[in-house]
Each structure stands twice: as structure tokens, then as C-alpha cells.
Image: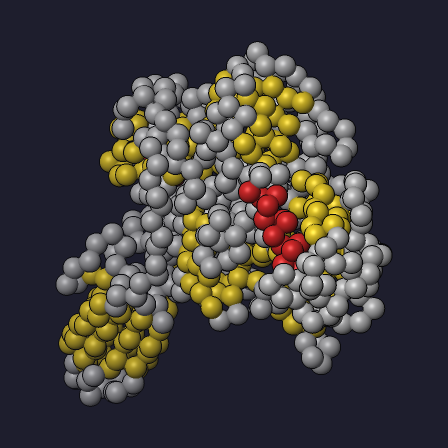
Length: 583
């Protein structure tokens, strides 16, 4: 089954609730408003995007806000003790709060740094939830009995039997009670399978816009090849494409004799997966015969449209009692990788009218490594145009030759050749780093997947030193955004132009442009309008006193849950007006 994950937009539908109450001089206060995260009635508010308290009477009022006490920790802990904040309002005065997330904290330290996430191991694709199946499951059953449903939210994508032939992803459709959830089976390209009692349930945080690939067969073989040829995984059944495998996302092999590891694929055809030349794990030659399991999870790299979505934030901000849970507002950040490129620096700054002085009607060649595949590129200079630009110019000829290699399936998606800042640049179409160390080549001191390396060809007339071409090219590594940069005055400032930041209202912003959304309760996030195949790393705080949504129940409160008032005057009653802006 393949179901497209629906992008969530942050929509602000504000609903105002207004109460105006007369209060007496009673010492024990009169409750005028109550928050209940699970219910909304004429007397209860369930959320707040603005709390306005106004004295509409003729005498002074004493206002009491009831909240909870929290103790600092990792995560923070709730002491189950209430505390009250009291103040005075004169006639006509008002208090305006942006929300009701106000608590008592045990120390002078921050109450939003309970726990921190910084992209540790984000290419695994799944996180152990510490919750188990409480029954064996057949291939079609949709009601699961589990240890504790508090771990999960409606809409969660969960993974079962990681690395096994029975691997499956399910989606939580509803939560019946503390030990029962209802799920949709066989999600994101997987199929319904049997699962044993006590099987571990995992959060799945791979890209929900893209199916996973999962294949188990006895026809899979492995071939180690020395440089300059790439290692390959082959399938005599020619099912890699039909099973959904694509370039760039890591593939994990299990149940083989000698090759159980994670590899980076650069090129995939029906019967062959060609690995990235710099993939850290090399293959051991192994014949087909074992029932080998291969799984590919599209993790921490955007898809071909520059988009990504997950129903959770890498599994963090969840626990068995939901105290505390969720992501801290304003704490989320994403750093992305730039495109790798190589440049040829001529003796002068070049433009499209620059004459290369290459020989007309002559074939030239160079070697290129792009997305981990090394090959020669050969082109023939036009008979009458030896300039860089123009329909038949040298740049056009090179780009056409590269596109021919893409169509011949020699390289996966190619690269772009253009003039940038007076230099001839060969730029990758991907923006992928080291896959958390899965790609590395210390001999080149580059070691990122999107590196472009331009060199002399294995055969043919080299372009280097020909005409006015320089004798070498310089490679610029794909680079993750720096935390800080220097401004025009040489001062160190945060790098807001390259880091996606959370505005605290559910919007993920880059240099003033929305690039995604974040749900602080579930951790679900979307990214869009990024580069195709762009690797990112994520950061956030979670499980703090002020994380997630407002919680109000008998044992756990994370904000103001009662507003009370009394008249300060012994002779005249007061009047209070409460306006709650909800959504």
C-alpha cells in the first residue's frame, strides 16, 4: 500500500471565549475560568493563544492565577503541587498574556532545556519506543494490544520487525484505550506481515512522502571491486527497481554471510546497485544463495522535490506517562548541506563570450566524479563557436554530453556546468554530506557524497591545458551551514540566512521565508522548498516543563489552569472580564 503523507499547514483559526463575572469580597476567591486540555465548554477553555483579564468594575480586584510547580532535570519533573500567583488590578486595568503557559520553576535556570536533541544517529530511520506488542499479530489485524498507548499519537508511523523479512510500517488511526491502538497496515510501500508477541514497536521518522524499499531474496550477490570501479550488489531476479530502491538513500543489508552493514547507493538499475566510490563499508565478494534482506529508508535527506515529512521528531519528546512530553516552542533548528562543486579558474574572469581557443570540430574529454560515480565526459567543439557561451558553445556541449550520460544510466542525475563569479563551475544536483560518516575518503580530505572531482580522462584528448583552459580543477566540498558568520563589521553573528529556525508559532523559517512546520505536541514536522536530495541535521529541546501542548489533569499541569478573583472592597462587589483566544 502506498499512501501519500498529507502536508500539515499551520492554520490559525482563533475562537474567542468571553466571560464577565461579578465577584465578592470572599477570602477564598471565586473561580472565574478553568482550563481543560481535553474539553471545551462554556465554563472551560482548552487552549490559549491569548489570555486577557480586565477589571470592568468600579473597585480594585485581587487576581489569582493557579499553576503548577516543576523541578529542574533532564527531563524536568512535575511535583504535583499547585502554586498561586496573586496580583492587583485597579478599575479599568487589564493583564494581557500571549498564552497561559506560566509555571513555577524550582531554580533560576531555564525551564525549557529539559533534554536536547542534536541529530544523533538520524540515518537509522527508527527509534525504539520501549513499548511492546502484547499479542501476536497476523497479516490483516488492525487492532493491536500493546503495553502502553501513552507513547503514541494519532497519525504516528510505527515500524515493526526492523531488519527482518517481516518488516512493516503501520499508521496509528485511533487510540482506543491505555493498551489498544487501531492501525492502518502495510504503509509506505510495506506489506502486512505477522509479528510475534513482545515485538518491539519503533517510531519511524523516515520521509513519509516517499516509500521505503524492502526486499528479501536468495538471488542477491555482492562484488568487491578495486578502484576505479565501484562495488556492486546484484540481483539475478532484476527486482531492485520494482522493489522501489532509488539512489542516494542508505541501504542496510542483513542476513548475508559477510556483508551485513549499511551502504550508500549511487546508481540503481533493475539488476545492479552501484555503490558510492567513497562508501565507508566495502563489500566482500559473496555469491547468491543466502536469503538476504535489504532495506532502504529515506532518512534525513529531502526527496526529488526538496520536501520531507515525519510524524514525530526523531522519536524524542515521547514517554510512557506523557509527563513531560513534546517539543519546546522556538527550540527547533535545521542545518542543511550545500552543493558540492568543482571550479576551473582561468587567468582572467570569464563570461559567456570568453573564447576558449579550443580547436574547432575537435573532441576533448575530462574525468568527473559525481554522486560517487567516476566516468569520462567527451564532447566535440562546434565547428564555428569556440566560445564558452551560445547554443553550440563549449558549456552547452559539455552539459549535453553529461545529459547523454544520465540518459545512458551511466550517472544518476548529472550536474550543472555554468559560469559563477567569473569561473567555470561544475555543480552537483545533490546536497549530501557524509551520511553521518557512512561516506569518507581520507586520502582526498573531502569525504562528502556530493563532491565533484574533475580530472584528466582515462582516454582521449584532455581539456586541461588545451587552448586557454587551466591545467587543473579545484573541488569545493559539500558543507553544512556554519552556526555563525561575520557581518560587514567583522562581528560574529548567528547564521540566520542559512539555518532554518523555529519562530515559536509552529513555522520553520529561513531568512524570512517559511520552509516548514513543526507540531510541538507530536513532534511531527514538514520541510519544503529546499533543494532536491538535501541532507539536513536537526536540533531541538524536548521534555521540559514548557514543552508540547498545555496539559491539565489531576496529576499533571503545564500552565495556568485556573483564574480566580475577589473584590478588594468590603462594601462593593467587583467585576472581572476574561477573554480567552483559543484555536
